[in-house]
Image (tube, rainbow, N blue to C red; front, side, top):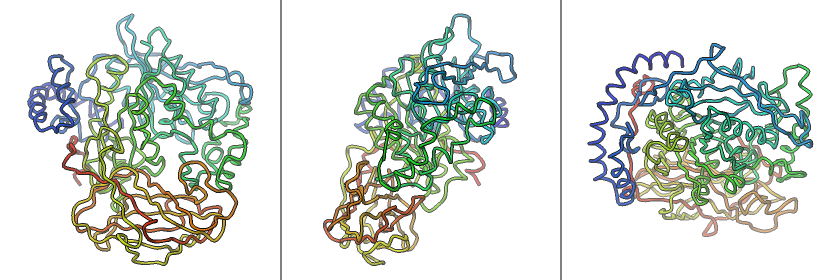
Length: 622
């Protein structure tokens, strides 16, 4: 990272000249492109053209960015417009300032209640006296934790903080890093996104927005756990929180590890086994880690796997954020998700993006075929992309070297009111690498293609029984396609089944096959006690009598299947990193019109496709 920053500094003078030169050529390119835009984008084009009389710098629609000189040969993206401000120097070598933010923890939370204390470090630009600036903040459990090798919260994180400080702070932004409860130097327990953590995050947002050097506007950004804290803070409707940028974040903790009642292997131990050691360092303050939720966490996870629901209390309800965001939040959302994310599955973003839009929250989506990572990391995206339907087919087109510039433009608008209003669309990449624009996702202009098991999808191997040991099950395959097929969203598999005991589980694998060469398209899983779909039990410990219809839904996918290829559907009792069902049973599949695969397809000729800046990093050229 440090070498890349130094190299970027050397490029800066040359880039400034070529970027200025690029403005004129980009203006011509934009005018030409607008003539080619479909009717769907006429309104967008007119709005952009009408604003040409105002000098907003190098800001063009996303479909024109491929023609500009972004830095594309380093390991991450860079802004195209370098700011005027230096960092404000402080007493330490990292030019940061550390404070503790105090807040009240409810007594029932135990631990350090009622005296909450949040550890916060911030960096400021050296602006003229009296000039106030907005704040971009990252909240998470990884600052100053030995297990993730961050020596102190005063050091900018190498994964995101360094880039924001180097590229966006000079444009007149402050940046902050905040340790959530029970981590780093923050007190209380590691609450795994519970009430105490939520209240601490809200208190830190209020503190950042109320300083005399702040303009009152705060943004939150982060990936994974750090991408979940923005959802937490947005629940409160805090007047200072103007925008959030969740990157592969959680809308709820249970939703991370359960899908239609089926449990990931990590689910029963997530609280204590994965994050339990955070904040425990052997000193006298460790008493603050004795919290009720820390004690019941493992039991709650195990019971959810065994019984399919919350046995007692509201552990999971406390840790579900989206409903309160939709009710209370008044800011905007820039939602970023990897469609091949193995850690935080894309159902956190799809159909969440549509729920946000439908509730009047200004929202944009960026959904690429990457893993659990940022959109612009060339090396990581290369290492974590595998052929066979695991991102490899979309590399290197998945790398978005325009992302840092995109963030700058987003923050300029929502934190300063400067520049152009961002286009509130969804940028989606197919599994074969092509980028297009949708107004929402899944889109509203799809056609449903229905294929019945046993007819359009012929059983080519296996019997009709799915054994509980995941060793065998039926495999269905279509005839070769007579034309290219474009699939998006969340396909459904509604399958009639019968079981020998009280439950059972189904895992469905969807593949694109060229002869015997098949690649992963998507997958679905369901504990049959949830056969109606959703999060509510359809049946408990009573035996399932007769035939039921399991209404399975695939994780979000976007796929192109070529003419002559076939679609393959395989059924097993489990797959990916999911546990066998606690209610193991032989599951018998009924074929016919009652068992169907339902795909949402669209006409690609009616969509706008474009190419992002082309990667020139060595990992793309090798």
